Length: 310
Image 1: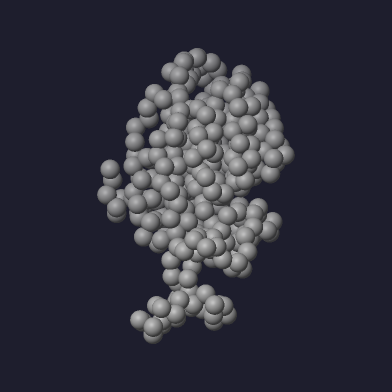
Image 2: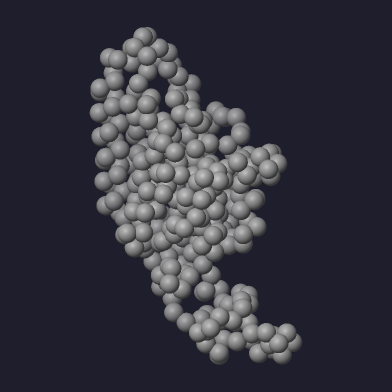
């Protein structure tokens, strides 16, 4: 495992500065809230005590813990389970195809790790609880959401471990993994899925069904579709016979890229637009990202858009 200083590289200072004032607001009703920031389906206070917090002007006096005041001469409010903040998960695809770099500065997996780090940092600055799930053919990493600032370091170390690992022979099984995620997240949350969608074409309907499963469980879902734009979206390889190897199956094929480029680009565009449309039909946000594009710029533009939607 990489040590902590190495892991901190996933928080680029320029990106943190650019995103520092942004707020990722939940567009749908999610469990928990911060007053004035997130909406909540609940009102009042529950009967399950969680912790104390300092009294703020405007808080109702009936929630002051007078026993604590008697001991400390300070006012504290009883905080209940219901008043916890937004729960947020980053769900990161770590399958072999995510190790592809192409013409990008980093692989899709490392790009996803940077994006994950920015989201974790953003959510913790908002005092929201954030957690990490990683999968290939099944879920292999799950860190439950916490809202404490000190939780950022373990998340970054975990991301560094994942992004530094060698590609295995394990194939993507996003549909079954996301079904597992839907069953394992018991409380309504904001779920951000970062993936290249390199699933068998015949299983795309299963993948959409799995995303609908998350929505059925009342989670808000955002899909970040990460590809290397020059080669994976536009098939810009040298115009000579080339050997292509599937990173997940090992299958090989030799072809002349120029002969397929137009048809390939058309097929990718059709897939992306169809997937986007079917996601929107179920109130799932679908955002395309290119590893040649600075991740912080893409994320800032996206958060700007979400702010306008709330």
